Length: 100
Image 1: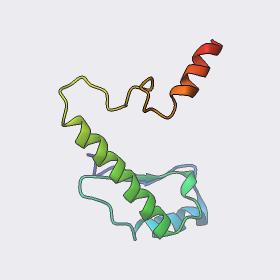
Image 2: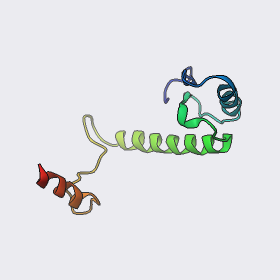
Image 3: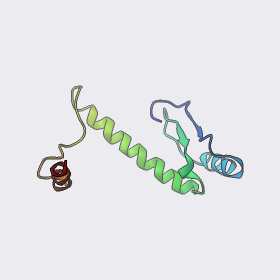
Image 4: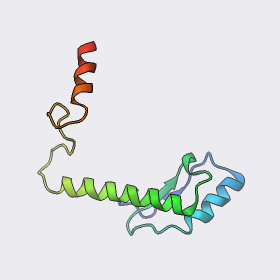
């Protein structure tokens, strides 16, 4: 959770031994400053290395989004126009639109 270092924990749906294992795994993670995290049920049975890889990927996505947002005046969209010829979903979008 970007910009919220006090946030974090484990989903309330996770109990018992699974919760203890996740708590131990979370203790081994390197969490960036000014960020917190919540481990959801998809994290059950994951190793600390898997959780760290996922966290690193999400941080990379967040930094990419905030970097692009900082380049443009608000309001703006960081998502490319799906009707452009370079968009991979242009054909799929056209097919879906044609059905409705």
